[in-house]
Amino acid sequence: MKKLVVLTGAGISAESGIKTFRDADGLWNNYRIEEVASPGAWARDPQLVLDFYNMRRKQLFEVEPNAAHVALARLEKNFDVEIVTQNVDDLHERAGSTKVLHLHGELKKVRSTIDPSLVQTLGGWELKLGDLCEKGSQLRPHIVWFGEEVPNIMIAGSIVRKADILVVIGTSLQVYPAAGLLHHAHHNIPKFLIDPNAEPDRYIMNLTMIRERATVGVDKLIGFLDKSDSTFS
Image (tube, rainbow, N blue to C red; front, side, top):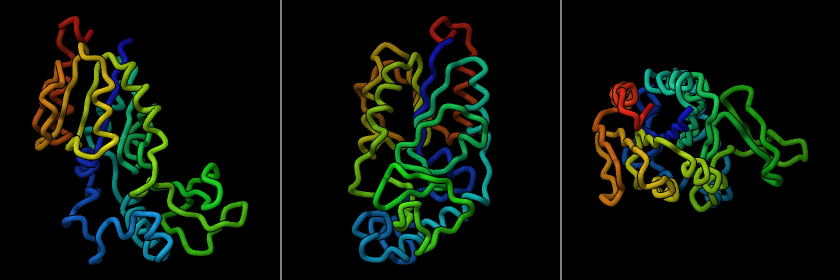
């Protein structure tokens, strides 16, 4: 069974109604996104940071996976599918995908501020000041903030290197280190980029551009994969 690795970004979740990270020019309630998503922001005003993520988490409970999420899950019938996502939502999992690696954390999870290994799923959408981990420290969003390392990037690179087919969906390929993952793939494997606006590195070999939003683009991708060409069988 061929290994199909899928890298996903905000564009795939936008069609479910989740606002992309930099909607409204990166502003939230007149704060720049870096002012509510960084260690410095947490140190200055943890309540503001909690309010921001509570708002995002509440929205996540109100949306559903879209056709692109569902189609990727169904591909597991014919491929060994692994998804590496920049998104912090759980829409891939809710659609049925079984192998999902989150690069930037998970919105429905929280972790200890003194022991990052203590991670738990939040029961609802709201995290409050005074909500403590088992060691007695404040819980924070389980999110990779600006200025923090991306702990899963090495794992993601090893996944991409094993790909027989690589698909990138809903990302501009401008945010590093995630954007660099494309270069971990073998030169000779087929690669697909699904996004209406992305401008890929011209030196990427065997790349097929599908300039569509995710739901339309994934449908076209399946058409490519269904061809009898031995490259995809």
